[in-house]
Length: 181
Ligand code: FE
Image (cartoon, rainbow, N blue to C red; front, side, top):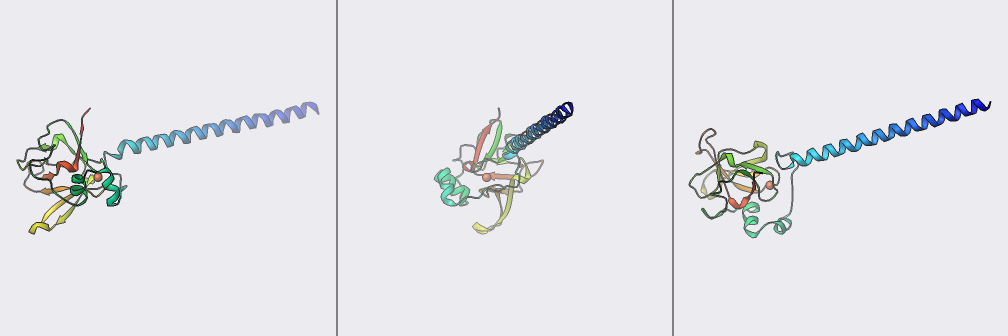
């Protein structure tokens, strides 16, 4: 009888330890997968648009942008030609959205268009920008906007160099230059 009781108690203890071990393993796996997914989300957040839009009111944008940047990015303004800091920038790096930081253009695709604005012949990832027909100023142009925060960046024309034949004419103030490491 005594041996039987010891046997039952022993079995209960063994089952308890096994369940605790399984629970521990599950929670470790769960936290590892959460860490991995938050890491990868962070890693791709500024490189390729993931479909998650950023929406802020004018007053919220005014808190994080200079008055000139607000006027260009949020009110579709244009900086005066040859006044932007990045027009003649020849350093290697990435040109990100001046409002939200999404990567837009690479220094490898920049060229001197002699227009007085930073010019690129292609976008870093097509999904990072949106295009809209702009019929202001008595002509039809194609406006370029940040896909994530809908900020105005500039316009795209079809008189650029090969291999694309495109000229993305972008306001310096609408861009934030991130030097290559
Ligand atoms: Fe943006």
